[in-house]
Length: 339
Image (cartoon, rainbow, N blue to C red; front, side, top):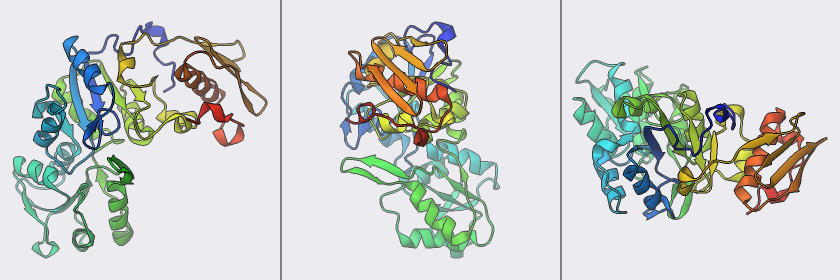
């Protein structure tokens, strides 16, 4: 999918024709305990407009009740049923792999244990109990012992489901190792990979579409390799906000399947008319409002920066993506990605 896939629909704003906004959490709504600027007011405005909001998270350390309480503490009106977690999607996958009521070895925290209990599964932390499967999700308390128990159990060839494989997770102190690093440790020990429920796999997106009966959803995320890739795989239009992990530098070099339809400064952009992108006849020059960027040989050239840095980024992404050339073969001026 490319940045311009929806131009023929004459979209006035990213919300045009949308019945459900599906929002990632870390990097979109909050970072650690603090709300991201403008996120709460913008989401409240979305809700007031009659568009339903679903909150989608790969973080498996908390229950939907805990997530809803966290979001509500910012002033948002959120019920647990408005939250779709990777443990929920993972347990749905697990149910297709083992018998009902099976004993499951858990690597992770309350979010996983809660969902397993709701689905009627029994829980253990000990490989010696001969579990029917292993399910693994992030928790800050996961240590070597839990990873070792998973490895012991998986050497028997039983199913292995992971909530997600995010390499990193944004927290109050910065960017920290995510569940993907922990899954990788077990993978190294057992020599095989799990079935994955969370982004960028489609299971969590399908769970969200079922939950909200979404006919025309818009996904909003901040990571190319999970949010944007996953939404594209699921066939959902997607907006990328520059408030989280991936910013201009990553967008400029985004792979074709990791490119969003919309690039927004923050969630206020959901309500702003999305600017048209104009190509020259040879597609070597792009204009977005007053921003103009072209490719000359191996050089990406800023002809005019315009008045809006995000328009300049949109134009640069458009001309680079349209060229079909790898970013490492181009000379990109620092003004396009520094800041």
